[in-house]
Length: 401
Ligand code: YNC
Ligand code: MG
Image 1 (cartoon, rainbow, N blue to C red):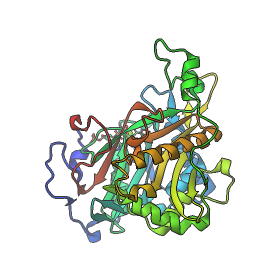
Image 2 (image 1 turned 120 degrees about the vertical axis):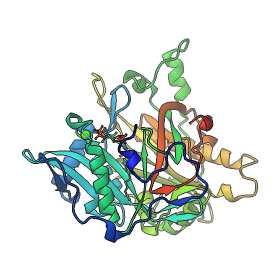
Image 3 (image 1 turned 45 degrees about the horizontal axis):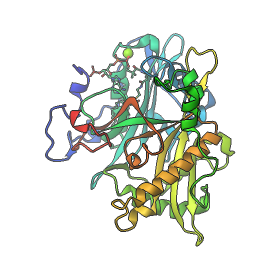
Image 4 (image 1 turned 90 degrees about the vertical axis):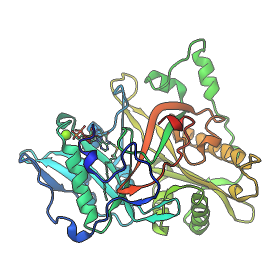
């Protein structure tokens, strides 16, 4: 019955949205300067993710307690490098890395994070944050700590004059602005089968499944290479132009593009979190790029394997999209299929076991041809304190949601 969410400025499930915009107008002087009260056994933690100890505590809390699949076979394994990338983008504030400790033991038992993320919702700019990584220790679940974490991060964000947010969750809350489905492309089918991620369909042999998912060694796209800092201007321009195709996007600044797409160019390739590749034609023009990030699962209770390597398709762009009739004559579909085919080959070489993509962006143009299979997980997108009409996330059964 959404006791907490009913009190928040979010649209009801049955609400008919005629006009898009802010739900509740607020100003900074209405916001309390005091942290929310906690039960006496807890206290707020001032985390500083630049400190190794603090970062290690967040790592451990998430490693042991963060998102699992429905049967508790897998849990997201965010590395400390990943947390650095995800939690410290340009303009990050350590006050928005909110922790809760048990007073007696000092143990970190709760976390939620806000990061700067201005948005564009259709034609409208929305000054906003993204909220992610809410986590409550398993032993303290269902004690209404989550609403307190949410209200506290909201207060801290509001104090800086930001009153809108984007967040995603597997759970259904009032009310999604968009819904996508995960799809999975096995790269190492036998391992996925061993850990119970992939199933052997009836009347098919393991050998046939392995053959089905075997990739050719050779890529399809000529002049594909890793991104370099010198590519920044061209990549930015292409990226921003391509993002104009979509109705709900983060409105990136140049620094943010550098952070999210270029990542840490200093470290060796095998240690990178985000991997970006560009196509440079003979004249030195960047015509396409794609990126993916690596976020493994911890495998729970399996004698053979303790980790599954997972790549998530991230941003991409192709100037084919801007050719006349590229969509209707299938040119974009062909180009993206070739590009992502090569992303699969590269990911496989990085020991990735499965490559994930959502149904959003232009992904429906290639997920079938490239043998991605529909997962059972949905990802719901939410806007806080902002009303917007539903935006397609590429599901074919969207009407039923
Ligand atoms: C969730 N994922 O419905 P009602 S995704 C939001 N996002 O409230 P309690 C959630 N709300 O229904 P527990 C939620 N999950 O009564 C549950 N809720 O209105 C709601 N899991 O609280 C739920 N991470 O403390 C209910 O539940 C209320 O102890 C119940 O804690 C929940 O990061 C949780 O899946 C998720 O660690 C912390 O189960 C816990 O179960 C856990 O009794 C494993 O809470 C990790 C996990 C979720 C990842 C994510 C996005 C978070 C978005 C939060 C909302 C942000 C709003 C925008 C802020 C605005 C800032 C500005 C401006
Ligand atoms: Mg709780």
